[in-house]
Length: 65
Image (tube, rainbow, N blue to C red; front, side, top):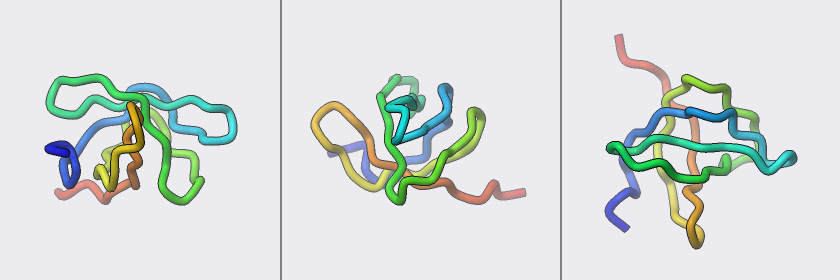
């Protein structure tokens, strides 16, 4: 998909166990899960690794100064 490899911002904390998580990627809001089960806080920057149905699979990335 065209979102793979794109940066996004977490708008609802990503927590796979609780089933929560939303990211904004290029102005589109997606449900998201973390690739490695880590909790990713709201406001974090993430990179899209994959799309599973209507969910994005993401991992956090370091902010570039």
